View (cartoon, rainbow over the protein chains, first blue to last red):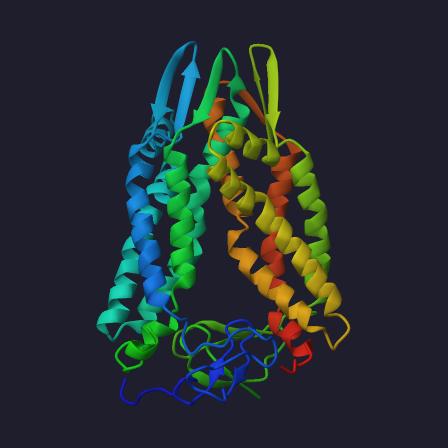
Length: 213
Length: 200
């Protein structure tokens, strides 16, 4: 990249994040509101990096109990069994439905971990001003946004298993404490992706980061 | 020709006149800047009305049933949420309720209002406000994740007892298709164009 490409911010224009209208703010320090949709105008989302870091760290903390604590407690004929997320995957695998085991493994274990790693990398890349490969970084971010919701899979599986298997006193399934942490990981990583301003990827190395990050 | 900034990388550029069914991408980051679907308001409106009906069916009929030792049980989406709540996981129950009920239901309701109100320009500013809310709801409406979750639960429980899919499950499946079709056929820019500029 030889010349710095002309972005709206360099041209003194702000694009509304809600309706995409370009406008020239009267005051650069306080861009004010969009004339069309009255949404708040920002050069870059304020404190985007701080919010994203906070949410990523919170999600990483919840990731541990989410995988260690049981998500389901099955009581059958008086004896109780506890299953963690991995336990559920192993159960699916041993009962012969390995394609499902693979789906749950990817959605519940690999996707959340991958999201945390990807977001951490993007945050570092923006903060350290690692230029280059911006298209790939944007693609990575889009992937994080796209696949994030799929981690909710296990929460739905647990919910409907609990709802259906209530045959007291023969057999009943109860949710374990892990499911709350697991749902928290999904929600926190989704919020982290939402709060990350992808324009910062392209700003990295052009000297705008310090002012607006 | 309209000048826009790419929402993903802020590159300033002019949008070409798009043919019907055409799509404009940012040359720098590849983000989709604009689409030009046929009947950008009428088609999504028809789909939203259909989605509203299917949503009611999905929530009033059983997702799946279970038979074991002469007993039969079935569950709905609300049933799953209340069972989670009663079993001591109220926060998880709320998250499930939000992703399975409130977000998709809210999205349908908001889009219905926006699309009806935008039919006769100039649209009032509150239409934009509602569209903003619909946009915010969309990532949290997880129909497609839920249908996969139901299927996995169904197969897991099939190891223990006889399970049968209910009408609700097929309705959730139909809802997934409708939601995808709405996002493909809807062009929010068409609504924004019709919103009268506010003086503040």
